[in-house]
Length: 105
Image (cartoon, rainbow, N blue to C red; front, top):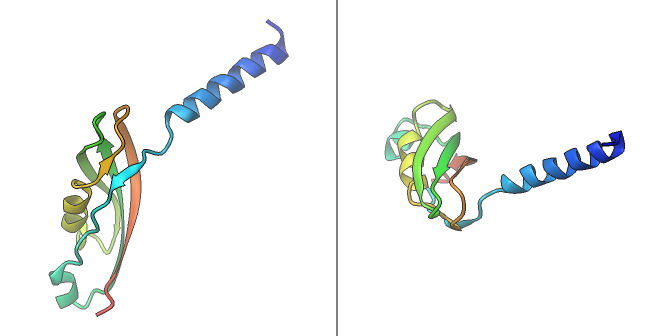
């Protein structure tokens, strides 16, 4: 196999691999509630990055908090909301999302 042909096959394989890991399409989003405890403590903003495990039927089966600022303030609200999200059915996958909290009150 020539070097050029090998490079073409490798490029095609890489494109297929990237296509296989396309971002899952959300069909139902549930926004997290702003925790009352956070507001009572004077915390008005936060950011949480979470990793979802999405089953083949599109349901979320697990939520893992990857990063949070401030730590452990919004975790419960994020997990509760993300477990209600639904995605288009496909292959089982993981997907990361970033949620930003801002209390306007």
